[in-house]
Amino acid sequence: MNFPAELKYTKDHEWVRVEGSEAYVGITDFAQKELGDIVYVDVTTVGEIVARGELFGTVEAVKTVSDLFMPLTGKVLEVNKDIDSAPESVNTDPYGKGWMIKISVESMPELQDLLSADAYKALIGA
Image 1 (cartoon, rainbow, N blue to C red):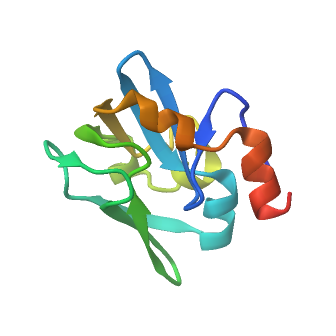
Image 2: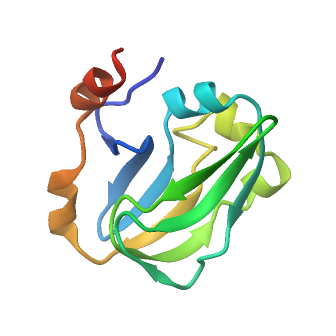
């Protein structure tokens, strides 16, 4: 499994890549493997400020639907349009083409509460 060191992680298996005051959010390689083949990503919070820990959408796999939780308080700026037409990119490239949302970060201090790659690996026993 892949755990890029430059990303931050949550206990709910989301990853965050911060670029200035904005961030990209997706699910981890571990999460996509656990879910199986992703067939649909549903995000209905575009334009909304969503608090850390709150639901921002769902991801549907062949056998299950899983909630997506906001890793940092922020305004949802956009949804990755590519995952509408090719949701399998979440499985094949979860940290690249498979990102789910772009947000403007409202509270940078919340970054300190996220996990490093090593802490996330320890959490999942990798």
